Image (cartoon, rainbow, N blue to C red; front, side):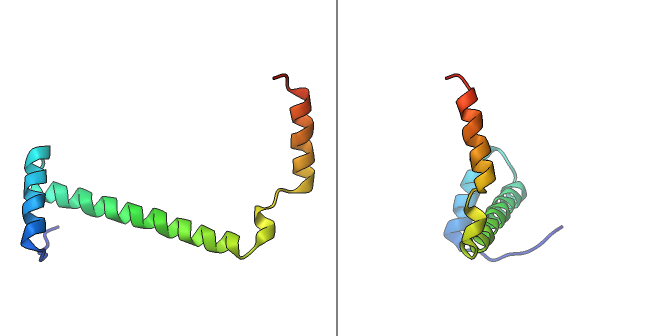
Length: 80
């Protein structure tokens, strides 16, 4: 897909140098940069949502007492 964008000349020149140094086209450089940004945004957004979920319900982050007991018992059987 073709698109037109406006960016400051300084950023454009830096991108041109980076593309040349990396041996990729301008289009490939911009596509990779946008993809990287979108993936990072998704991860940050997911982390933020998880933090909201867990901060609102303290019991979710607590270990179930039965599970804790089973884990403790299994440690006693393991040789270190």
